[in-house]
Length: 196
Image (cartoon, rainbow, N blue to C red):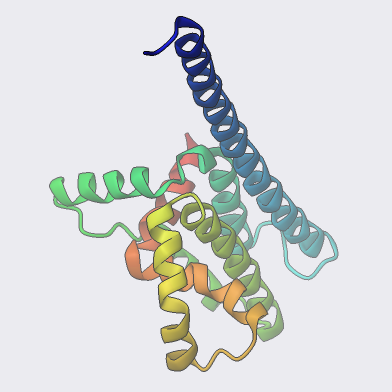
């Protein structure tokens, strides 16, 4: 026979576990978003310092596009989840838009106009760092994508010849994300968010 005191204790424990899980998940989600935005702010600040040092003109198209993209990711960061990105992809398919890549096209055209090879390479590194930050945000927020990354690491090591853990940690998230979702659409959405 179950005593009322035991039943009350079980209900109390259940309520506490549910409340603890809710609070923990809420704080973890908020902390992940704050961390993502902080990382993007740091990359954007380094880009600004690079331009302030006279390496590239503030009016240069590649600089403006990259900064606009980063601003969009900072603003759009709360929507950078696997579920929301999948919904966006489905919406675009239903509207008959396979892949909007205006930002990507503009980015490549503006990079071609940068005369200095070193500056072009540095801008590409800033872009890669920003997209790696985005990929980590999306992947590490989805248990399914985390599993995919873990399962694909041995394959990626064999296929791409990655030899050290640092290289895997830096490149695996973006590599995986770019094979699951169209990153051009993610960049377009971020650029649109920066304008709105």
